[in-house]
Image (cartoon, helix red, strand yellow):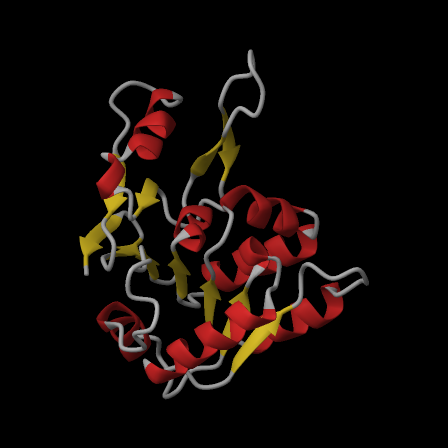
Amino acid sequence: MSGVIYLLAGNPHARGRLADPAMRAFFDEAGAVRPRVAYIGAASGDDLGFFEAMRARLQANGAGEVDLVPLCGGTDETPAALRLLAQADAVFVSGGDVCEGLEALRARPEVVASLRRRYEAGVPFMGLSAGSIMLSRAWVRWAEAPGEADALVDGLGFAPLYCDVHGEAEGWDELNALLRLLPAGTLGYGIRAGGALRVCGSVVENV
């Protein structure tokens, strides 16, 4: 049975705050006391400064050990990544750049397959900002030159929905751009800054 997924928007204006009710709720139902967390930092290039800050935040809200799953180094890190995923009680997907994160993961198909197996085995997943979008169905690769068109990029698809995060100040322009590339009537979720969704199977709830 697949596990629960929490999709957090984060709050770009409150980065110094460690307390996060949505993170606390996630760890309260993670199934282990102080669960060991596999940290997927591909969207931020495995940035160690960002990892250290997020590890402190995760642990302040209920996590135990937090392991950086190596994905963006120059050597073959796949065996270490697979070992850390196998040991994890929960998986956290960090923020950063959605497309770069997905590209880094898809360069290691064994890691993506392991993530899917862990999810299907019931391991809980949490995404933050770009990580939430990566866990969803798709995002947009934005056109970079005149004459080019925006294009869909497949997400991991563990959360069976389309979403954007903390885009309310811009009227959800990027979410609307995503929906224009999808069939008419497709539903998209805008997760406001500081907000979160809890996804379990086909049930989506506001946290």
